[in-house]
Image (tube, rainbow, N blue to C red):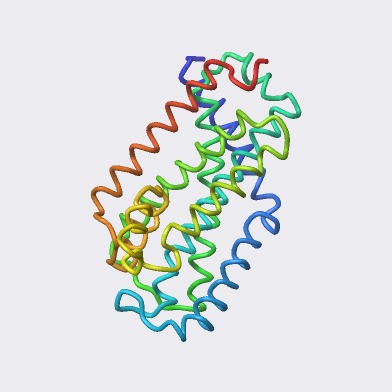
Amino acid sequence: MSPLQRYSIAYLTIARKEILRFSRIWVQTIVPPVIMVALYFIIFGNLIGARIGRMDGMAYIDFIMPGLIMMAVITNSYSNVVSSFFSAKFSHHIEEMLVSPIPNLVILLGFLTGGIARGLSVGLAVTLASLFFTSFRVDNPIMVVGVAFLTALLFSLAGLINGIFAKSFDDVSIVPTFVLTPLIYLGGIFYSIQLLPPFWQNISLGNPILYMINSFRYGFLGVTDIDITTALIIIMIFTIALFSIALSLLNRGIGIRQ
């Protein structure tokens, strides 16, 4: 058996395990985000949105729809990888992967595949659920799929890095609670940054999630608060940077071989 065949089998094994991990308990992993987003649609879209009026020339519920989908993709791709990798550390079966003749790159790709699969699965489920509340259009399908994939990849990487450094289950929840959630809600899901004073517009430009949500909204609705080329470049830079950091940490055994 050639090295390429061994690596392919190893990758498919890890990826299959990661996908089955969340798909077997879909009632706990996929249904709750759909229900939560449905509540956002009812409360913010229908009830409050009717009082707000139009945003960027469209119904408020249509405006927030892409951001709510992106929120589901971000949180689920992140949580899947951080919980899975930390569980592997906690139960010590990550050592079995590290001592096996498998490159760390293969291990990394296997975990990332699970995070991407869950993020996109939940995103698709939320998209289908949104049809009950709004009849959206897709202005640029390639942009929608590309940004969703890159975002799921980016936050799967972020989740893995969190899992590497986490020393307890409390450490797993710190970043989502105190970093990820504020960035998501301040990323332009519920408002256009054009409504903000110039000072706060400039502050908002330092939030990377703003570029993902606006790129995703541009793919659906054809409207954006920021330059799309700049947004895509920033997303790619963050993705490449986190990928390099995650692979370097695995190669050095940080948080694993102590």
